[in-house]
Length: 84
Image (cartoon, rainbow, N blue to C red; front, top):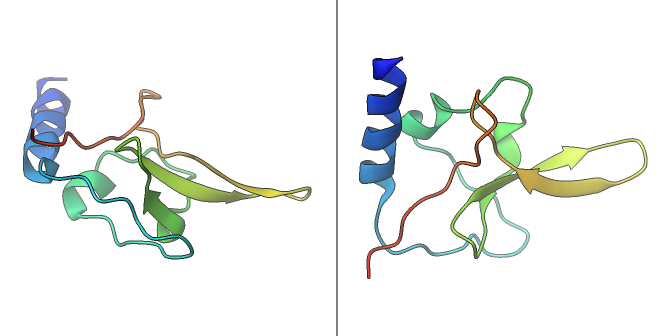
């Protein structure tokens, strides 16, 4: 339990900085620290950093394809903190 908390703190610290959203139509590679937080079953090859500072991935469904938040194993959104 403590290792998960420290991992989340370390990932947030490493990722903190100015948040620049991913340009439309592009995706970005996730750092290993973030990949360690991602819950199974999510497509990490289509990840984008949105204006809200959180990572979203493209979920392809039979009816539509839509970006949904990238979540941790405990169902929390994975976001970065912008420095002011």
